[in-house]
Length: 48
Length: 223
Image (cartoon, rainbow over all chains, first blue to last red; front, side, top):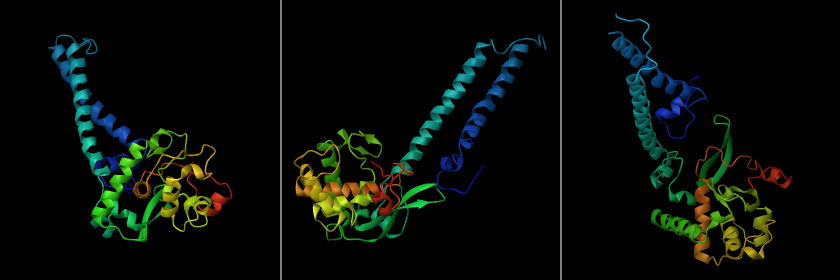
């Protein structure tokens, strides 16, 4: 999934965007995972 | 724990916090991408060219070099290759001269509204040929039909001659009208086109001719 950098100007996004899925998976991970945390916090608050 | 069966999905604070997180993250990401893009599209310098530093957009003095377009197996498309020094209109242009010429070419391309018919770097119309890689078009090279019709010996002189008298030359089914382009403006436009062909566009436009032979055989060309 992670291949040698082919972009002309190296950048963080160039590394992430090596294939059609790498950037998508990364963005979903960083956006969705904190939402689990928010969910659990709200659940605990409601249970109180 | 009072009630284990309480639903978070109907909780307003949950949706509010989720929306704030997603929006906030997207804002930071877009700002970051903006600055990342600036680095990608910033024009290189004369020193970059001399030291062989690859930039997506080379400096104006790239007009002093031979530009080739070669298939890169690694990247899966053709990329501009800046080669040896090559005189442009019979001389080597200084950093300032090259920048001025390119600027004149850009202003002329805007004043004459090239994009009304042509495409430049993906912007414009497809009524007339795509000009993004026009400098590299085999038809303008030595032995090509477009250079041949003008009676000139170099790509730049042939293009400049055509640009000054476009309606005299049969080029395209939809012939280019005479736009009153002066000799200096034509030089600027050719420099503008040569510089544009050296920009790494990730292989755009696709299906550019691979060789002169392929072109002569009616192969695919970016037209």
